Image (tube, rainbow, N blue to C red; front, side, top):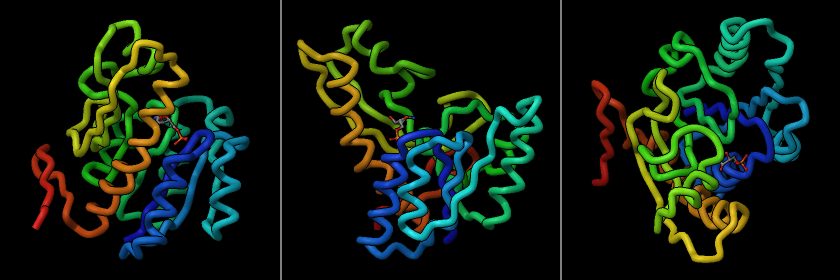
Length: 201
Ligand code: GRF
């Protein structure tokens, strides 16, 4: 299976997936890491690990539609079976999302359906929830609302700040995202008629 990973920055989730794929000898190849920002530090990690990298800079395009079309062309050049959004900070258009229906995953740093959108850790602290976490989901056109695959929860502690809470969540992201991607490349995770199916046999 060919995996293409999209990042915008640090790329620690991408790194966790690359490391798990190697260590656990997945039946998969990370075909490329693609960023919408030329300064994404995760590109260095990918290049150091012999993975093809590409930049499709959204600032070079006049509209979302043109950017998404260009991005789709670059992604499809790597013939992906799965597209993995890993801290990819762009809202995607409906035609793009439809093109990858059932074969594009995202990780969102909250226990969806709570706190879609940005600044999820600040939202969780402001709401006073006792638990927070992260969700892996299939991507659909409605932002952060696709069918959910896997969640991990962490406690919210009395003295938490955005920094301490996000760090606690990130540790769990690095566990659940590689797990979900592994299920997909092992043909154990599918989206059928909008419903997530996981084969645990
Ligand atoms: C992660 O918290 C992810 O859930 C969110 O953005 C952050 C990206 O971190 N969408 P990284 O680039 O994977 O280190």
